[in-house]
Image 1 (tube, rainbow, N blue to C red):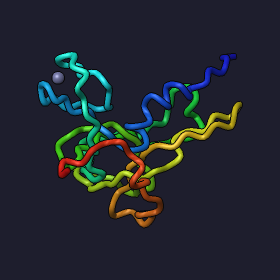
Image 2: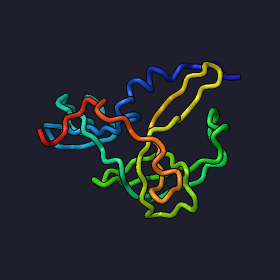
Image 3: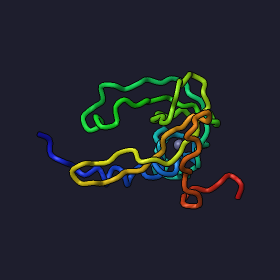
Image 4: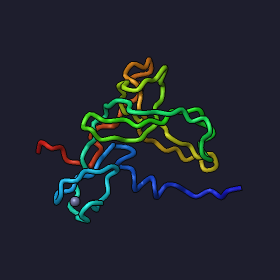
Amino acid sequence: MWSFVSPVPLYWRRRGFLLRMEKGECEECSFTFVPYKSICPRCGSTKVKARKLPRRGRIVSFTLVESPPRGFEYYTPYILAVIELEDGTRVFGQVSDAENLKIGDEVEATLRIVRVFGESGQIFYGFKFVPLSSSHYPVERMPSGTSNYQDDKS
Ligand SMILES: [Zn+2]
């Protein structure tokens, strides 16, 4: 039997990436990285801006998970994929509502429930990718106007 540890602090720290798809961009060395952190992993600068990642991309690789880690049994089977976004950033994420998924398929990030903790009933939202060809597309949209990033045009 395992004891329940609340994932809320970790989730809260990663909310910029999980809910708003933000990347970090260093003003000192121009390095960009995912997920956003307040310190540049390359040069250590704290002059890091949060930037919005594009929501659309293409499937680079994917796998069907049938033997999940503990805590994810309820969601099995599910698809995990590497997605190359329109700006070239590669992210790892779950794909839902996919029928006959293929490498190269176009997908878009949508806000979904990513996990429910049975003992506490905590519900965690985040983005999952849905193929543009899916009959379920678009079901839900990402929230807009709720982020702390600054657009390039200012
Ligand atoms: Zn840097």
